[in-house]
Image 1 (cartoon, rainbow, N blue to C red):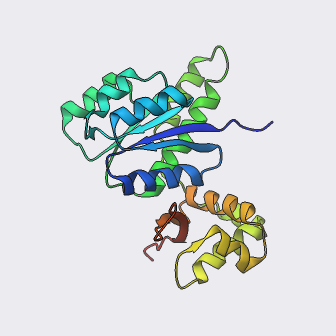
Image 2: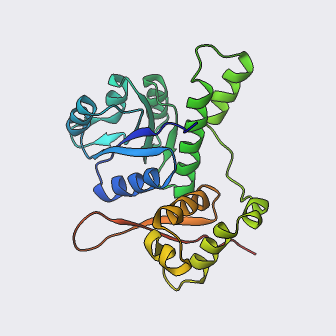
Length: 225
């Protein structure tokens, strides 16, 4: 049975930050970007025309408060913000935010929170849950940092090829470049790259060209010896 896609609205006044967050969302299996907007008004317009499961919302927006926007929502929300005032954190929680991520954060932190959100939704997809399942659902919203699954990597030759291609490159690679380098389809490369992002083996960032939408590119995460 295929898992559902969760549609995400990204709301941030900085278009580059908004596109970065959208890139992380789009790299994860089971998530799709519904809209990327920079104001409260644009968010309201997107919500009126698109069924959204989860909104990623900044606190400070040009035309209002992200916390006030979260209070209006009929979907789930997480705050992604540089605001660290205790009163703001409490207000976001009272408004219904499921998580509060302080910028700047590593892309793997958001990837882990989104994966946890997917688990939260799957656990609560039935009409009634046990006390243990309630605990499991809420725990899923605060995941521990991902640990690379070395056994899985060894058992998957394609995953290992993707990882080696990125580690062996002199510059970050796109999914299309990885696909060409090792002879697989772009969709397959994208799937393995997304998995390597969620296990903190690779870093995803956006490559900006002179025109068009930015492209996702991948590079190794260098760990201390």
